Image (tube, rainbow, N blue to C red; front, side, top):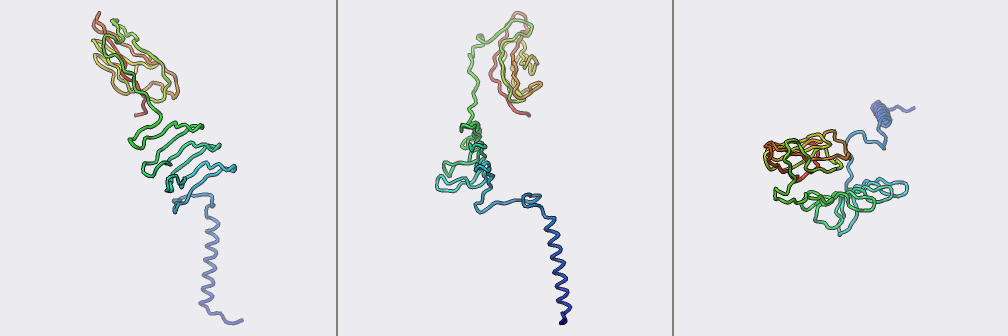
Amino acid sequence: MPHVPQDVLDRLAALEREVRQLRGRAQIRPALTEILAGTVRIGEGGELIVQAPGGVRHLLVGHLGTTYGEREYGVLIRRRDGTEAVSVWNGVNPTEPQALRIKDAQGHDLLTEDVKAGGLYRPWIPLPDLADDRITTWPTTTSTSFTTLEQGNAFLQHPRIAALVSLSGTGQVRLLVDDQVIATATNGNIDGTYAVPGYDFGDRVNIKVQARTTSAGDPVYARTRYLYGVGSA
């Protein structure tokens, strides 16, 4: 057997050690279906697609199409029947910002943002009804005990109520939800935001405005200017 220089043997031994290390690392490497740390970057026009066996693309992040001569990138989520559920894209022109849209299964916009002015484009939110401003036409009482002047029912969507209830005369006015007082004012208006006691989303509640005079024989008048459901503080 010919003589092998020692430096060659040393190099072979070093290579063997490196191969063993690489084998060990390969065995402890996470599966290619897992990302345990770090960042995944999809660039150069790439896309992320989640596609069902039947062909429906449930999730598409990336290029959504070319509708006005330019490629547009955004996000699209579809239901199992292929109908659009949530999207962030424009699809109309290359100048306006992309809009967030949530649609029902028939394609109607349930929620759409106003990309020009900000806020909501859909749904339309009703403004309060305008009331007769002649105080003598408002609901009234001369009782020194709290008397219900206005009431109605509502399905709760928010945990608080923003309220403005006007009072005219010497007395008190209060706002109740299911006969629990949430706000009271004396010789003035209820004007603020108040927590709904025992709030549970979707509950049907009864809302009342009650008033009483504190000057025997003199009438007090009360009128609800607005009630809005609002979120947590």
